[in-house]
Amino acid sequence: MDLQEKVRVAAEAVKHADAIVMTAGAGMGVDSGLPDFRGDAGFWKAYPPYQKLGITFVGAANPDHFERDPSFGWGFYGHRTNLYRATIPHAGFDILREWVQRFGLDYFVVTSNVDGQFQKAGFADDRILEVHGSIHHLQCTTPCTMAIWENRETIPVDEVTMRAEHVPRCIHCGAVARPNILMFGDYGWVSDRSARQQRNFDEFLADTRGGRLVVVEMGAGTAIPTIRYLTEELGSRSEALAVRINPREPQIRAPHLSLPCGAREGVVAINAVLAEESP
Image (cartoon, rainbow, N blue to C red; front, side, top):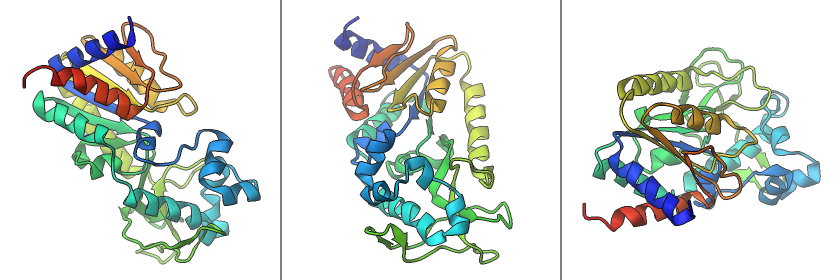
Protein backbone atom coordinates (compact mmCIF):
# COMPACT_ATOMS: atom_id res chain seq x y z
CA MET A 1 0.00 0.00 0.00
CA ASP A 2 1.55 3.32 -1.02
CA LEU A 3 1.46 6.44 1.12
CA GLN A 4 -1.53 8.03 -0.62
CA GLU A 5 -3.56 4.86 -0.23
CA LYS A 6 -2.68 4.72 3.47
CA VAL A 7 -3.84 8.31 3.83
CA ARG A 8 -7.16 7.43 2.15
CA VAL A 9 -7.69 4.43 4.42
CA ALA A 10 -6.92 6.60 7.44
CA ALA A 11 -9.43 9.20 6.25
CA GLU A 12 -12.12 6.54 5.85
CA ALA A 13 -11.40 5.29 9.37
CA VAL A 14 -11.82 8.80 10.79
CA LYS A 15 -15.00 9.37 8.79
CA HIS A 16 -16.68 6.17 9.97
CA ALA A 17 -15.38 5.99 13.54
CA ASP A 18 -17.51 6.31 16.65
CA ALA A 19 -14.58 7.51 18.74
CA ILE A 20 -11.03 8.77 18.28
CA VAL A 21 -8.04 8.62 20.59
CA MET A 22 -5.26 11.07 19.78
CA THR A 23 -1.94 9.91 21.21
CA ALA A 24 1.03 12.25 21.05
CA GLY A 25 4.72 12.41 21.87
CA ALA A 26 7.36 15.10 21.58
CA GLY A 27 7.18 15.20 17.79
CA MET A 28 3.72 16.73 18.04
CA GLY A 29 5.21 19.93 19.41
CA VAL A 30 8.11 20.14 16.98
CA ASP A 31 5.79 21.43 14.25
CA SER A 32 4.80 24.27 16.58
CA GLY A 33 8.46 25.25 16.82
CA LEU A 34 9.25 23.51 20.09
CA PRO A 35 12.77 22.03 20.39
CA ASP A 36 13.48 18.38 19.65
CA PHE A 37 15.37 16.77 22.53
CA ARG A 38 16.16 13.66 20.50
CA GLY A 39 19.60 12.55 21.71
CA ASP A 40 22.19 14.67 23.49
CA ALA A 41 22.98 16.60 20.30
CA GLY A 42 19.35 17.67 19.90
CA PHE A 43 19.13 18.78 23.52
CA TRP A 44 22.39 20.72 23.38
CA LYS A 45 21.34 22.41 20.14
CA ALA A 46 18.28 23.73 21.99
CA TYR A 47 20.23 24.56 25.15
CA PRO A 48 23.91 25.29 24.35
CA PRO A 49 24.83 26.28 27.97
CA TYR A 50 24.20 22.71 29.11
CA GLN A 51 26.67 21.36 26.55
CA LYS A 52 29.41 23.49 28.11
CA LEU A 53 28.46 22.04 31.50
CA GLY A 54 28.31 18.50 30.12
CA ILE A 55 24.69 18.12 31.23
CA THR A 56 22.31 15.98 29.17
CA PHE A 57 18.52 16.18 29.06
CA VAL A 58 18.36 13.40 31.64
CA GLY A 59 20.73 15.39 33.83
CA ALA A 60 18.76 18.63 33.46
CA ALA A 61 15.40 16.95 34.07
CA ASN A 62 16.47 15.73 37.49
CA PRO A 63 14.40 16.51 40.61
CA ASP A 64 17.55 16.67 42.77
CA HIS A 65 18.30 20.14 41.38
CA PHE A 66 15.29 21.57 43.19
CA GLU A 67 16.77 20.49 46.51
CA ARG A 68 20.49 21.13 45.88
CA ASP A 69 20.30 24.25 43.70
CA PRO A 70 16.70 25.45 43.08
CA SER A 71 17.76 28.38 40.91
CA PHE A 72 19.53 25.97 38.56
CA GLY A 73 16.61 23.51 38.59
CA TRP A 74 14.17 26.28 37.78
CA GLY A 75 16.49 27.64 35.10
CA PHE A 76 15.60 24.71 32.87
CA TYR A 77 11.96 24.38 33.83
CA GLY A 78 11.37 28.13 34.00
CA HIS A 79 12.71 28.49 30.47
CA ARG A 80 10.45 25.68 29.28
CA THR A 81 7.46 27.21 31.08
CA ASN A 82 8.02 30.52 29.29
CA LEU A 83 8.55 28.77 25.96
CA TYR A 84 5.36 26.70 26.20
CA ARG A 85 3.32 29.71 27.27
CA ALA A 86 4.50 31.61 24.19
CA THR A 87 4.01 28.74 21.72
CA ILE A 88 0.98 28.70 19.42
CA PRO A 89 -0.29 25.17 18.61
CA HIS A 90 0.13 24.32 14.92
CA ALA A 91 -2.74 23.86 12.48
CA GLY A 92 -2.87 20.10 13.06
CA PHE A 93 -4.47 20.65 16.46
CA ASP A 94 -7.34 22.62 14.95
CA ILE A 95 -7.87 19.97 12.28
CA LEU A 96 -8.13 17.22 14.90
CA ARG A 97 -10.71 19.27 16.80
CA GLU A 98 -12.65 19.84 13.58
CA TRP A 99 -12.81 16.07 13.00
CA VAL A 100 -14.35 15.59 16.43
CA GLN A 101 -17.02 18.19 15.66
CA ARG A 102 -17.66 17.28 12.03
CA PHE A 103 -18.05 13.54 12.58
CA GLY A 104 -19.56 13.68 16.08
CA LEU A 105 -16.71 11.67 17.55
CA ASP A 106 -16.29 10.85 21.20
CA TYR A 107 -12.62 11.53 21.90
CA PHE A 108 -9.71 11.45 24.27
CA VAL A 109 -6.15 12.79 24.11
CA VAL A 110 -3.25 10.89 25.69
CA THR A 111 0.11 12.63 25.63
CA SER A 112 3.55 12.25 27.15
CA ASN A 113 4.11 15.96 26.59
CA VAL A 114 4.01 18.35 29.54
CA ASP A 115 3.50 21.50 27.44
CA GLY A 116 -0.29 21.92 27.70
CA GLN A 117 -0.64 22.49 23.96
CA PHE A 118 -3.83 20.42 23.62
CA GLN A 119 -5.58 22.53 26.28
CA LYS A 120 -4.35 25.69 24.58
CA ALA A 121 -5.76 24.39 21.27
CA GLY A 122 -9.22 24.05 22.81
CA PHE A 123 -9.48 20.40 23.81
CA ALA A 124 -11.48 19.82 27.00
CA ASP A 125 -9.33 19.41 30.09
CA ASP A 126 -11.34 16.38 31.25
CA ARG A 127 -10.62 14.65 27.92
CA ILE A 128 -6.84 14.77 28.25
CA LEU A 129 -4.45 12.37 29.97
CA GLU A 130 -0.97 13.80 30.57
CA VAL A 131 0.95 10.69 31.57
CA HIS A 132 4.04 12.62 32.72
CA GLY A 133 2.19 15.54 34.31
CA SER A 134 2.15 19.20 33.32
CA ILE A 135 4.59 22.08 33.56
CA HIS A 136 1.59 24.35 34.08
CA HIS A 137 0.96 22.84 37.52
CA LEU A 138 3.14 22.89 40.64
CA GLN A 139 3.66 20.83 43.78
CA CYS A 140 5.82 21.02 46.89
CA THR A 141 9.29 19.47 46.65
CA THR A 142 8.97 17.89 50.10
CA PRO A 143 6.05 17.28 49.47
CA CYS A 144 4.31 18.68 52.55
CA THR A 145 0.90 17.71 51.13
CA MET A 146 -0.42 16.04 47.99
CA ALA A 147 -1.65 19.45 46.79
CA ILE A 148 -1.22 20.40 43.12
CA TRP A 149 -1.89 23.97 42.01
CA GLU A 150 -1.81 26.01 38.82
CA ASN A 151 1.53 27.49 37.81
CA ARG A 152 0.91 31.22 37.65
CA GLU A 153 4.51 32.15 38.47
CA THR A 154 6.61 34.58 36.46
CA ILE A 155 10.05 33.00 36.12
CA PRO A 156 12.70 35.12 34.37
CA VAL A 157 15.74 33.05 33.33
CA ASP A 158 19.28 34.17 32.53
CA GLU A 159 19.85 32.30 29.26
CA VAL A 160 23.62 32.54 29.59
CA THR A 161 23.83 30.78 32.94
CA MET A 162 20.42 29.05 32.70
CA ARG A 163 19.64 30.12 36.26
CA ALA A 164 16.20 31.36 37.31
CA GLU A 165 15.90 34.81 38.79
CA HIS A 166 12.83 33.73 40.76
CA VAL A 167 12.21 30.41 42.54
CA PRO A 168 8.54 29.47 43.10
CA ARG A 169 7.56 28.45 46.63
CA CYS A 170 5.02 26.03 48.03
CA ILE A 171 1.78 27.86 48.80
CA HIS A 172 1.32 25.73 51.93
CA CYS A 173 4.70 25.49 53.68
CA GLY A 174 6.99 27.91 51.83
CA ALA A 175 9.47 25.25 50.71
CA VAL A 176 10.70 25.25 47.11
CA ALA A 177 7.99 24.30 44.63
CA ARG A 178 8.62 22.24 41.53
CA PRO A 179 6.69 21.41 38.36
CA ASN A 180 4.16 18.60 38.74
CA ILE A 181 6.11 16.54 36.20
CA LEU A 182 7.45 13.00 36.40
CA MET A 183 11.19 13.51 35.98
CA PHE A 184 14.03 11.00 35.69
CA GLY A 185 14.70 9.08 38.91
CA ASP A 186 11.74 10.86 40.48
CA TYR A 187 10.36 9.56 43.79
CA GLY A 188 8.64 12.78 44.84
CA TRP A 189 6.17 13.29 41.99
CA VAL A 190 2.60 13.75 43.20
CA SER A 191 0.66 11.71 40.66
CA ASP A 192 -2.89 12.49 41.86
CA ARG A 193 -3.75 14.80 38.94
CA SER A 194 -2.60 12.33 36.29
CA ALA A 195 -4.33 9.52 38.20
CA ARG A 196 -7.64 11.41 37.97
CA GLN A 197 -7.06 11.86 34.26
CA GLN A 198 -6.34 8.14 33.95
CA ARG A 199 -9.67 7.33 35.62
CA ASN A 200 -11.43 9.58 33.10
CA PHE A 201 -9.67 7.75 30.29
CA ASP A 202 -10.59 4.34 31.71
CA GLU A 203 -14.25 5.42 31.81
CA PHE A 204 -13.99 6.61 28.21
CA LEU A 205 -12.57 3.25 27.13
CA ALA A 206 -15.35 1.39 28.92
CA ASP A 207 -18.03 3.60 27.36
CA THR A 208 -16.65 3.19 23.83
CA ARG A 209 -15.94 -0.55 23.98
CA GLY A 210 -17.40 -2.34 20.98
CA GLY A 211 -17.58 0.78 18.85
CA ARG A 212 -15.42 1.70 15.89
CA LEU A 213 -12.24 3.31 17.20
CA VAL A 214 -9.52 5.14 15.33
CA VAL A 215 -6.23 5.90 17.08
CA VAL A 216 -4.11 8.68 15.60
CA GLU A 217 -0.60 8.67 17.04
CA MET A 218 1.63 11.66 16.34
CA GLY A 219 5.33 12.11 17.01
CA ALA A 220 5.80 9.35 19.57
CA GLY A 221 9.28 7.80 19.44
CA THR A 222 10.82 4.60 20.75
CA ALA A 223 13.21 6.18 23.29
CA ILE A 224 10.40 6.36 25.86
CA PRO A 225 7.81 4.09 24.23
CA THR A 226 4.86 4.63 26.60
CA ILE A 227 2.67 6.26 23.95
CA ARG A 228 3.55 3.74 21.25
CA TYR A 229 2.66 0.83 23.55
CA LEU A 230 -0.70 2.43 24.30
CA THR A 231 -1.43 2.98 20.61
CA GLU A 232 -0.73 -0.67 19.85
CA GLU A 233 -2.79 -1.84 22.84
CA LEU A 234 -5.77 0.22 21.71
CA GLY A 235 -5.25 -0.98 18.15
CA SER A 236 -5.70 -4.57 19.32
CA ARG A 237 -9.34 -3.89 20.19
CA SER A 238 -11.93 -5.19 17.75
CA GLU A 239 -13.14 -2.52 15.33
CA ALA A 240 -10.00 -0.44 15.94
CA LEU A 241 -7.45 0.98 13.51
CA ALA A 242 -4.24 2.75 14.53
CA VAL A 243 -2.51 5.36 12.39
CA ARG A 244 1.12 6.03 13.39
CA ILE A 245 2.47 9.35 12.09
CA ASN A 246 6.22 9.61 12.59
CA PRO A 247 8.96 10.82 10.23
CA ARG A 248 11.72 8.56 11.62
CA GLU A 249 10.03 5.63 13.35
CA PRO A 250 6.68 5.02 11.63
CA GLN A 251 6.74 1.22 11.72
CA ILE A 252 3.64 -0.57 13.01
CA ARG A 253 2.15 -3.98 12.28
CA ALA A 254 -0.59 -4.39 9.68
CA PRO A 255 -3.47 -3.80 9.39
CA HIS A 256 -2.48 -0.58 11.11
CA LEU A 257 -1.07 2.29 9.08
CA SER A 258 2.33 3.98 9.16
CA LEU A 259 2.70 7.47 7.72
CA PRO A 260 6.40 8.47 7.51
CA CYS A 261 5.97 12.21 7.97
CA GLY A 262 5.63 14.89 10.61
CA ALA A 263 2.54 15.26 12.78
CA ARG A 264 1.14 18.33 11.05
CA GLU A 265 1.92 16.99 7.58
CA GLY A 266 0.18 13.70 8.28
CA VAL A 267 -2.93 15.26 9.77
CA VAL A 268 -3.15 17.80 6.93
CA ALA A 269 -2.85 14.99 4.36
CA ILE A 270 -5.69 13.00 5.94
CA ASN A 271 -7.78 16.15 6.18
CA ALA A 272 -7.19 16.91 2.48
CA VAL A 273 -8.89 13.62 1.59
CA LEU A 274 -11.77 14.34 3.97
CA ALA A 275 -12.13 17.81 2.50
CA GLU A 276 -12.72 16.32 -0.94
CA GLU A 277 -16.06 15.07 0.30
CA SER A 278 -19.03 17.27 1.14
CA PRO A 279 -19.75 17.77 4.86
